[in-house]
Structures are given as structure tokens and as C-alpha cells.
Length: 510
Image (cartoon, rainbow, N blue to C red; front, side, top):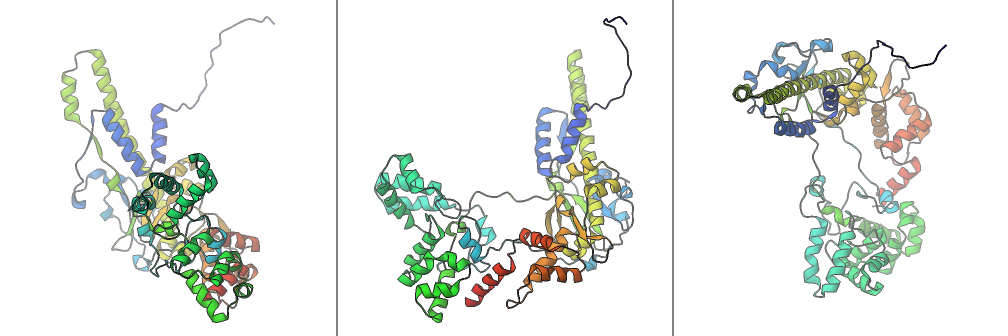
């Protein structure tokens, strides 16, 4: 057989993603705020795009508004809920809204005294009953994240009145710049002295200057030093209190008898010392705001209707409504004399029409997925996290007739707001655990909620072990191994039975 070049014709099929298809896929994964930015850039690039004025009241809604809003009808196929052209008011609803418990589910976030002692660099309170050195209640979440005066600004304002030495003032400001949000100095003072090319004594004097600033305790290099500074300020730093503060690790381990012997005090004095200790602020910097934190803006709004159903809509406050400015197109087309100008104008018109259709399709897809989520997790919206069902992307994709990767993009970076709070769409997809009855399964989030409920209700004199929790959860219908219970317990920030016994012993001494 002779070897040589030759030309063959072959016919084959392949899927080629056009730039427009790639862009449409990217639009699905964007949140409403990111879409708003994208639309702003498109408006700058395309003169034929325009934004409509503020939308009219609901009575005057345009026919295309079903792409932004839908209602859930009990027992209806999802594809009948979207894009039928009917107004939301035309659809009867069967879900009983009277059964909705509007109480929001509370999350974790309490940090115990033992945790604060063991991990002084972490953020958080040392107990749910945080008190500052002056006796007032600790800062609330709003006060911490309100974006007011920052800790650095507050301390910088005190440098000038505290010293007239410009060198000391400069060193103090460098130290202030190294403080973390809790007010601690996480870097070694020797490193600061080396960086500034000064001796250690000069750096120590500047740090002592910072220690005298308000709030008391800032600039501390450890939890013990922070508490000691506050005890000195309150004139309570006697030898007994000093030994207590120097041995906070024993307090964290619950070795109260040993600690009392080291301090050389009786039961009454020891209890007073512990109450005094709990009155100090382990994280003095947290009472000041940091950088303003961005609030979560929901993309999907779910509300109970007066007739007992659900109204599911996109957050129109973050979705500008685009139109093609036909009048401007006609005006410009009349002045286009050359072929290149007409081709450019036609391209812009095609781009504008495509973008509007792509955004409309995105809205319909998001609503379709959100409607199925509400349908699948009806128990959660009515009764709370204990009724959250295990759910997968594949199950939703099969129900709405989309690919699993499309559902994944739709649920990325999207938040849903309902009567219970604001949740990321990914929250509603949870792995399942076996049911003791053998029928169906339960969501991992529901199991965590059950574990928290049992531990919150436990008797301080009869702390529940993980084995006991396994038996109690089985009575509730959850079939779990002991190590699984331990994993879920640790995931929600609850300590072991030994740790909880020590923590509750400390609370009893208080």
C-alpha cells in the first residue's frame, strides 16, 4: 500500500458553545447584585439599551411580569407554574399558611468561657452573658457591625493627648496598626522594635502607653494580660486575683478545687473572684465597628399569601428592567449612510435583543428552581428546620427538566428570604440519614437541630453522653452511629459531655 498525502471529507456532529451561549451560562451563576453590575456595563456599551422607569403598582403589572413572580399551587407540576401567561392572582393555592410558624430559627455563635480561655486569639464572647468591665452589657451584633468608629480611629485619637513625644506617638501608632479586631497585639514586640530600628525598652514604653488607652485591655498579648490590665484598672489586682488570672487554663479545664487552693481563699471569696473575672471583657476591641460589612441582599422572596399559599418572586429592587429603545434605533438608522455603520447598528440591535431574552430566560429558570425548592421543602417553611428533607441537585433537576449543572449554577450565590430569615439556596440541599422506621430519611440539618434541642434541655446533673444521644435520637426516628452524632454535635459547636459538664459547673459557681 502506497503512502502519501490525500484529502478526505468526513461528516460529524459536535456541540460548539457560541460566545452568546457561554455568556448565558455565566448569567445563571450571577447573583442579582452582580447582574445589576453586568447590566450597567451593558448599558454603557450598547446605546440601544435603556432602562424602564420604576415599575407601576401590581394592578398595572405588565404581561411579562410572570417571569419575575409566580405562585405555588399545591399538587401542580412545576412547568405549569412558570410562563403560562396567567397572573398570580388567577392561581388557587392549597398550602395552609395558618400553620406557618414565623419564629426565626436561631443559629450558633455562643462561645463558652473554656473556649475563650483555650483560644484567646479567636473572635467571639466567652459566654452568652457577656459583661464589660464597667458592668454594662456587651456590644450587640448591630453595634459591632454598624460601621461606626473603628478601634484604630478610637485609639489614634488618644495618642496626641497621651504624649507630646513625637517618637513615642509614632511608635504607639505603629503598635495600634498591628492590633487585631479584638484589640490584641498578635505580633511580637521585638519584631516591631526591629522593624522600626529602636531598642526594646523604647517599644515597651510605647506599648505601656497603649495599655493606658480606652478600652482597657487593648494591646494585650494574651488573654491573661488583657484581664490583668482590666483588674488593675478596677483596683482588684491583688495576689489572689493575680494567681487566678495566671492560671486560666485550670479554669478552662474545670479544676476549681485545685485553683481555689492555689489562690488560698474560701468558697465565698472564690465565687466572688469568679464573678469579678466574668465581669471583664476578653475582647475589648469588639465593641468598636470594623469595616462596614455588606448586608446579604436576597435574590428570591417567598411570602405567605392571605389565601394560604406562597408567593414566590425575584427581588425586583435589584433587577433593572431593560428595553430596546426603538425610537433611538429608527433615528440613528436614518442617518447611517455607509454599510459599516448599518452593520454596527444591526449588531447592537441583535445584542440588545439577545440580552433581554437571556435575562428573561434566567429569571424564568431561577423561579422554576425556587418554586421546586419551596415545594420540596414545604415542611421547613411551615414548621422549621426539623422538617428539612434531604434533597439533591439531581432530584430538583429531574423535577424541573433541567440539567444538574444548570441547577447548580442557579443555586450558586443566590439567597432566599422567607418568614424564617434569609438562607442561601444551597442550604436547602442537605445529605440525608437513615430513618429508624425505614421509611424515607431525614436531613442532616434536621438531625443537628434535634441534637441541639436535646442538649439544651439536658439536666446539668445528668449530662447526656453521645451513646445516650444515639438512643434518644432513635426514639425520634433518626438512625445514627455514635461517631455520626459526635460529628454533628461538633459541627454545631457543642462540646463533649465532659466539656459541657465543666462548663455548667462553672455556670453554677457564678
